[in-house]
Amino acid sequence: MNYLYFAEATVETTGEAAMYPASSFLGLDAVSATTTRLSFKARNNTAVDDDILIKHASGKHAEVAELIASVLEPSPVTRTKFIVVSDDEHDIYLNNGNGAGLTGAVAVTTIA
Image (cartoon, rainbow, N blue to C red):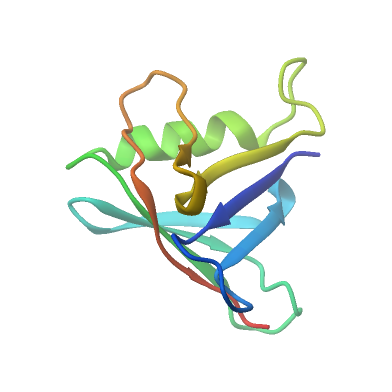
């Protein structure tokens, strides 16, 4: 199983970075032209989902969806991997060459 990691620009407190197993991914939706929300099952098993807001190139929601889908299912290349999707603190962003243009995790909202 793959694990997806997200972190805001400065990780100073609980809830500004999070890692989720691919199996907890619930879906994604467009929030604005340059922001997509990724939803995961809450890490504390409550009814409220954890959300990650991802910044990206304008109008690239479909490319972001394709990018996330490419790391959700294990394959010979991505089996049991720790995958950094967006780490603002270290300027690391997932890129598979599809033009999604991730530029950061605007907000990591977890239910502690």
